[in-house]
Image 1 (cartoon, one colour):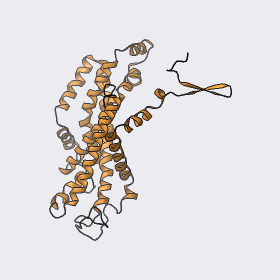
Image 2 (cartoon, rainbow, N blue to C red):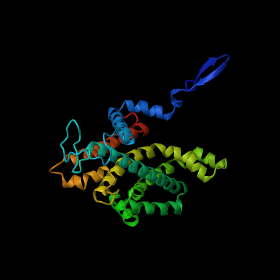
Image 3 (cartoon, one colour):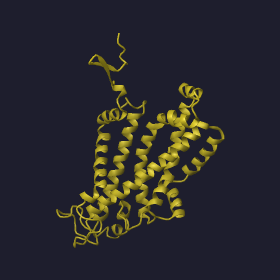
Image 4 (cartoon, rainbow, N blue to C red):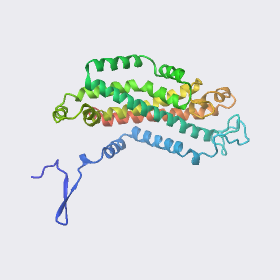
Length: 305
């Protein structure tokens, strides 16, 4: 009797060639199939893909350059300028596309930094326990007690306002929540039999953490990173709106909402409306996509919806 759990075998020139079963196929294929069955998650991913393509290809897809003047000042949206022009005659659509490039780059880099730092801190805390866990968790508690925007403002006040420091500030503010998630995953698996077996075989703590514990924390870390990306973009926009983020001469969605966008709100509201819509759409899509990923990757929720 053939075991249904074994991979399918195909005979070829007197030999056998193993064919992967569905359970052994790359995890990305499984996520893609599951995402197809979640309309909100699928369409949010599609929207994010379009936004990312426009951001990456801004130099080729934007009708005008960042600072190119069209000679039309505060012109209303029309066929020649879909999003209108600003007070300096610059095409708002083009600047919105270029602004997305900066906002997404800062957001992705901040989330990557926060995820790496938080994951390492959480794994070390949960794996070693004892005084190491107490020290790290007290630091995490203090950082989590401070609102994200306020913690980012504190870092920027110390380092100064530029794109790199904004990235560091947001990444620092996001790291504690990632650390808490990684710690929970480490605590849930460190006493399992295969971890004990790895110790018995002489594996070092570093190898056990990153080879055996981290893969079990991958799913929740992916979910929290997708949700935090929306938080990072909102935080960057808030800092830019307050004049403490990316310099005003660099177009970001937050910068476009502040400054001239705020000054000309009654005369040329499209200068702020369209960047605001781009920001809102991106963050909403990220949150919906994060919810879909949570449902797919969490075994308790996988079949509930």
